Image 1 (tube, rainbow, N blue to C red):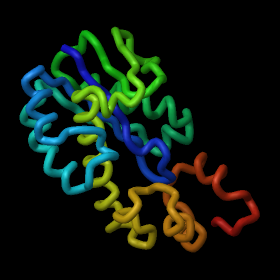
Image 2 (image 1 turned 135 degrees about the vertical axis):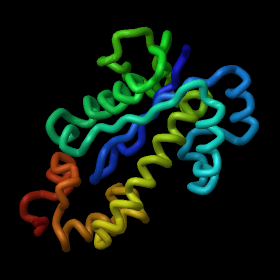
Image 3 (image 1 turned 90 degrees about the horizontal axis):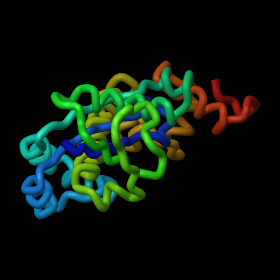
Length: 194
């Protein structure tokens, strides 16, 4: 079984990084491509949401994983991303024979065969499907967390460092789910961030 993996949320200031692992047969690959499956960044939120049930139904296997903000702060974003990918891969019912990893960096924690593919989410349907599942899952979490932390507007920017988010950080300070290691680079000590 060949599995594509991708992540979402690496550059966010808030919340976990998500990853998904997806295995598609040739027929499912063609069907999903015909439905418009491509890199999640090239799709509208509605289109991504519409594709999720098709991906879940047609995939021979799929799973999600996360790397927490605490893990990001403790180990760095690359390790946390790898942990998220590894967790997704470990949830699959069968160990993959080959893992297709979006990007240039190999999944160091994966003991099996793998291949990195630059812009893989626009070239391999399994990686594109993983990017869609991860994006929709993370965005859903951000909308739920927006109810808990309404002053930050997570439903509008998903935790990325927009002007709105940066202003909310200055006004309200960081939450326990903010990536403190990212904030120290963004806000010098004397800028008023609590």
